Length: 361
Image (cartoon, rainbow, N blue to C red):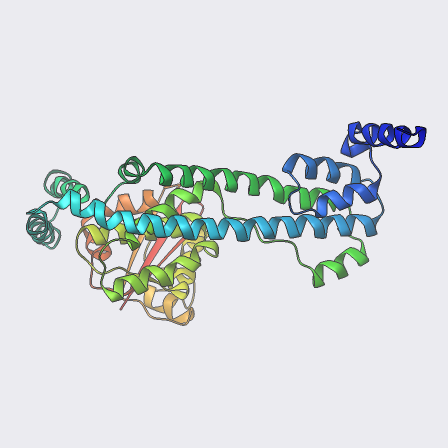
C-alpha cells in the first residue's frame, strides 16, 4: 500500500475515534439531520451545537424537530398496527369469557344492576353491597383484560413493549429542541423563524398509553354504530384535553359499556363550562351547584355561556385524578344516577382538586 493510502487510512481511523462532540459543527449538524441518528448521538450534537451561532442553532433545532416528527409518525403507525391486533383479539377473548350461556347471564346482571341504580331509596351502602359485586361479574364477562390478551399473543406483548419504549424515547427527544435554543427567547431572528417553523408538538406520554390501550380494546368489542362513533369521535380529543379530564370520561364510558348503557360523546363546550365552574369554586372558595358569579348562577346558565346546553351536573372536591372523581360520584346516589342517565353528551372539567361534570341530551 502506498504511503498516501496509509496516511489516509490512519486519518480515517483517527477521525472515527473522535467523539461526535469533538468534531466540527458541520459534521455534528449532518449527523443530527440523519434519519438514523440515535438519541445519544443527537444529545452529543445538541450539546456542542448549543455553543454555536444563532443561525447554526436554528438549523440544529429544525433537525431535531424533523427527527421528533419522523419518530412520532412512525410511532403513530405502530400504534395503528397494535390497535388492529388488539381489536381482533378482543372479540375472540370476549367470546371465550362469555362461553355458551354468558350473554344471557350478562343480560340478567345488567337488568339487576339497572333496577338497583334507579331505586329512589338507593344508598351508598347498597351500591357497595349489592351493585359492586354485579359490576365485578359483568367486567369479568364482557371486558377482556390487557393481561389476558397479551398472554394469548406473544407478538402483541412485544408490540406493546415496543410502543412503551418508543414513547419513552420520544419524551427524551423533545427537550433537545428546547436545549439547542436555550437563551435565544428574545432574539428577533429566532422568533421570526419559529413563526414559520413552529416547535414540534408534545409527543404522547408513556403514562397515557394504558388508557389508549383500554379504548382500543373497547373498540374491538361488539358495539352499536352509535357507540362506535362516540368512542371514535372522542379519541382525537385525547391530545387536546387535560389528561385527567379525558381519563375520567373514558372510565365512565367503560363503566356504561359494562352496564349496557350508551357511550357518551365529549362536548368540548360542556367541558369548558365545567372547567370554568371548577375554577370559580377553587378561586372563590365555595362548593355548590349555585354560583355567586353573575351570569353563572345555574349549570344551565354556565352551559349557555359556553354555547351549549346541559341537563344535569355533578361536582366533587379533593380528587387528584379523573377516575377518582368518577369513583366518588359512583358512591353518591344522586351523582350516580346522573352518570348513568339517558344522556348523549358530557363534559368533565377540573381546577386543582375541584371537579365539575356536565351532561346534555
